[in-house]
Each structure stands twice: as C-alpha cells, then as structure tokens.
Image 1: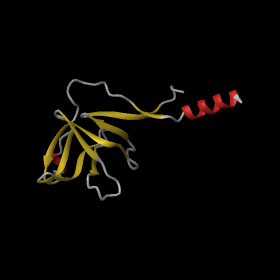
Image 2: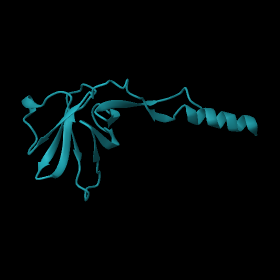
Image 3: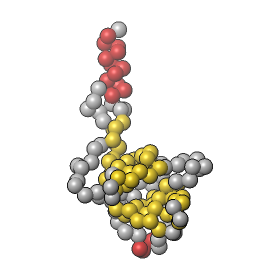
Image 4: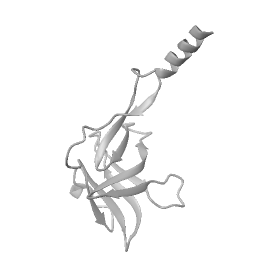
Length: 127
C-alpha cells in the first residue's frame, strides 16, 4: 500500500500548479492611472493599469496583457458581476485579486501583485 500512495502522490505532483515568484524588483513593473473611460487603443501605455470609473466608483480595470500578445485585458470590479476582481493598494503599487486566467487567445495565467507579474506554471519539481 505504501508504494501505491507514493505513486499517486508522484502522479498528482506532476499537475500541481503554483505561482512563480517575480524577481522582486525595487520598483513595481506596472504603474496605474485613474481614468473615466477606456483609452483609445493607440494611446494605451505598456505596463500601465487603467482604473476606469469616476467619483471614487470604479467598475473596470484594464491593461495590455503582460504576455506580449497585445490584447487589452478588462476585469470587472462591480460586485454584482459573475466574475469579480478586487484592487489592493500598496504605497504606489497595485495588486489585483484573484489571478487572471485567460481562457481564450494567449491563455496566460498570472497574478499582478504589488505592480509585478507572477506567472502561473505547472511545477513538476515538488512532491
């Protein structure tokens, strides 16, 4: 029975998912701006998170996908929505929770934490 358990544990470790930690740069990779509307495609800055709304009420956050595919990712902030993200502010940096798991096109999966991207990977090294 012990060998069976080890085999099962090994099998499941092949599919264990974890977030890769960023290199922890001293400055956040991403900055953020408050805007009233989504900027025109040509004026969207790289590595900028746009917090969209007015009068302290924000309904969407948007940014270029960090994988480089060029897509403008929009995340709902309204609590009544089906999929909802939350923003957390840290001394000039921003975190978005939960992770962003793109199901279409580039299929990227990442966290934005304190202005830095942490990619999700399949970790076959841990048991």
